[in-house]
Image (cartoon, rainbow, N blue to C red):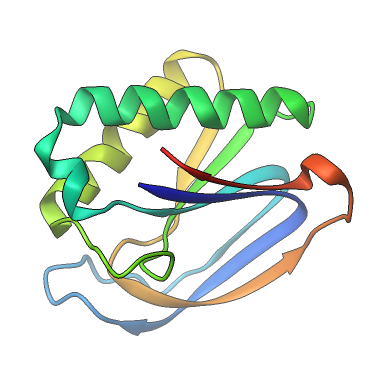
Length: 137
């Protein structure tokens, strides 16, 4: 799994193009402030492991990043551009849903960007050391 995490002052999205036939119809966007946005690519090799172990690894990384940025909001964004390897849609969505649930149970405010869509993004991110962290998990 590849993860690019950014602390953002502001983050917003609007659905631009549906790219997964089974995705729910979404027409509205959303915006967030003072948040961690995680651009996540789940890879094929992740499917060889238990989804719960992958979810725990991801959530621990996101919680660490949030603490380093004194933040309690996390947005999960499927971003299949960090690697050539891609996990199945079903595995990826299950991992995202489990991670979101675990983060909420740890009293984080969470959201997911619409799964199965290309999105128009607006990002305002400060330039300091821990505002952008890339990891292979």
